[in-house]
Image (cartoon, rainbow, N blue to C red; front, side, top):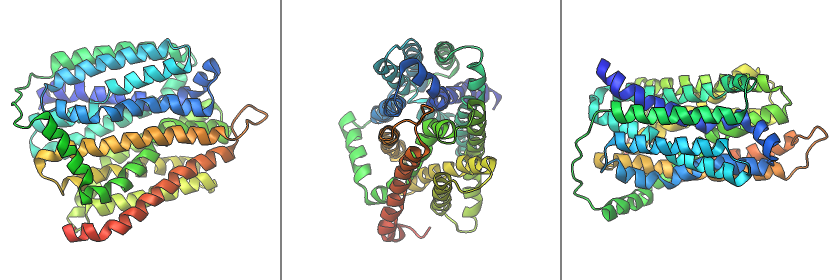
Length: 408
């Protein structure tokens, strides 16, 4: 077990830590990017969403590669690319160069979670997978946590460019650790052609059960990640006019709650299954509460901020339980492709939603203080809420299909 932790879990979980750090750090450095390069809210949303665009585009090729190439080679090679992307981002002097750097980073970290999950299936007993997968997700949450107040503190000593130069070096080091520490893997030649594997993706997406469940999951997760990785920071600083250090403090609280949520949600769902309550029911309950939290944010309901952002981070993770729900309806040999199919839809949605929210915010003229007014953010956040309501309505319309497939 110690060898597993040292040679497999720690290297791969650190890669996912970096992936989530990159995903959320723009929520803190956004004012610096805006000041240095004169970005509008729409520009900021476009730049930040580039990470999710490349992440989405690579999901299908990644699913195929994970069945055909050693995990250590895929993960290490891609993290090298992420290190290059961080260097491009750090030296950018235009919006398009920022976008390119962010796009390359997203491509480079796209295997950090799926590669780790595949490795754990190979080297861990089945009964320990829920725990180790939860710890892997928690490592990402810690990445989000350290991308908040600690980065804000670092910006008091240096600038965002030097932060990304350091990130580039750390990412390349992480790639080397994975390549030399993770054990070699015997790859069994796949009996399926690449064309057949691609056809399987199409069959999964067209499957009636996937078609019924996926929207409510990826729309809720898209809202959670879009807000956490960029727009909550802007809401706090520009909408509520909080000082940067105070805004970073609340981002830290939300990120810490996210770590707890990823660890706790799986445990809660497992325990409730003993009483006949399915993971789908737990997820839907959590997503309903998450929707109410977002409404409370938009309407500025007088809830103590610490409680509000704890709820946002903790309950926002409930959408991830839908992965386990979907896997129940498909053969085990399709599990990897089911997950990457949902990931594809998720990251396309994040890319579109994060960018569209910036466009909405940009529709309002700046205030006398040079900020976007709070009404702009309320309308942008409302778009995310409306999409999630649409996901719930779609699920309710298709619920009879699910009931006919399972008694859970």
